[in-house]
Image 1 (cartoon, rainbow, N blue to C red):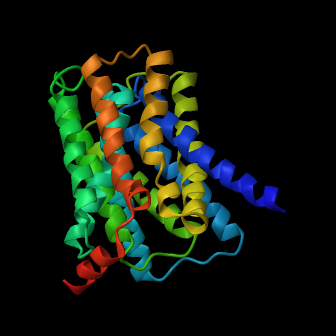
Image 2: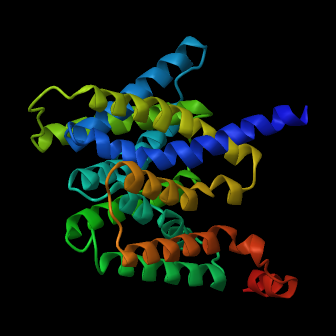
Length: 303
């Protein structure tokens, strides 16, 4: 019985650690033959269509207008802007490993936005944010991002949009279960394809098999499977475990990019990687590693 309970947990963690970590490398492969907005749009539109069809065929109903619109807005913030800008940045030759390192700052931005929504932030967590910002500055001071400032800006905007969408999404009414994810992906796919049209993206040649396999992998594994694995984790484990992908994904992405993609990281970028991961660990696990003393917590409550 215990093994049956542990097995889904292991599978979900594998999906987040390895699949989400590998998506940066797969995006890099895909944008070699696809325009970035077009590829991201096809990815989310196909994933959302498949998931929505499955839900409707299994008896699920469309949600009421308010939660439906909320899910659509979250889809724009998280997927269209958050993931779409990362795809564009990789199309502009930002290495997949570096993109994953910058995206690892999402928990830091999430903490900042949570503070603006009235959630108290500990000094330890502000220290983690400060360390993370130092890592971002170091990452931009030399190497791959220093020659591609627009790529760095795009990923940072995407990370902030994902963080804000995550905080906002926890405070609004959303459809139950997988229906929220289906609507988010459908909305993001439509918005990204509109962006592709408005920016004049065109296929100059039919993508090779690797391009189609990349889109298929991102739609099935990176979107449908991994997102549902994340939903399973946040219902069954502590938030610290569920969000631990934030500092595992960059390591997976860097190893894949340097090992199979011919990407190269300078010594400064390796140091920045370590600093950012340390900051994310401090923010996500700090309250468990260094719990707040009872008297301090009481003082915070009285403020």
